[in-house]
Length: 264
Image (cartoon, rainbow, N blue to C red; front, top):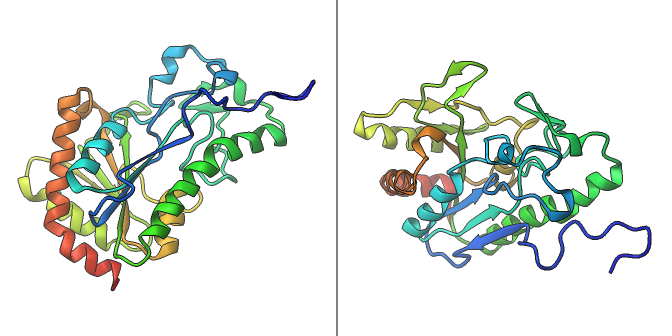
């Protein structure tokens, strides 16, 4: 119980944890993460001052990304770490120095509960949600340190941004090393029916992104961020189809990807 005058913990024992791990002992060569897997808000924060319907939109999470990641994990027997709470509470793919870490507005929508936060309130969210998620990724990758591993970060993106239609069905983004992205894009192009984004709709940037630079590039792992357009993720069947397609593409390039990972 909290002391008199002290706020209760951000998460109570009966609330879901800040992350979920599937197939921690998976035998596949890929490790998967999903930074914006949930739109949940800690009970103490209510709805962040938003209409609850807003939390179901892209500002609250990446719709469909977790569904694809879970199915892809099963197909590749790959370990998967998923975030447990909304990106509006704290964004697990933003550096803590970034204004987007705890956004006061997103896509033009004000987030009232994020305005005027004290340093203590910010630190509470970091320690309750951000650190546990990334510590879980660190533990997973540490446990695989003796085996070649490829890091895949699964996201989704809106079909329209700022009034402009986005033509890509799927994008593969990379940081300093484009080789894994090039392999995966070539494999995805095999069917000839997709419009592919090469470092689009978003490139990986150190000032904006956290997961790939910190857990992938800093460890020397082949790593990419995969972005799927959300109008192709409206049903469980669509999510399953994307997972199957990604698994097929990954298997096609797996041997070359592991050569990028170096010796075990």
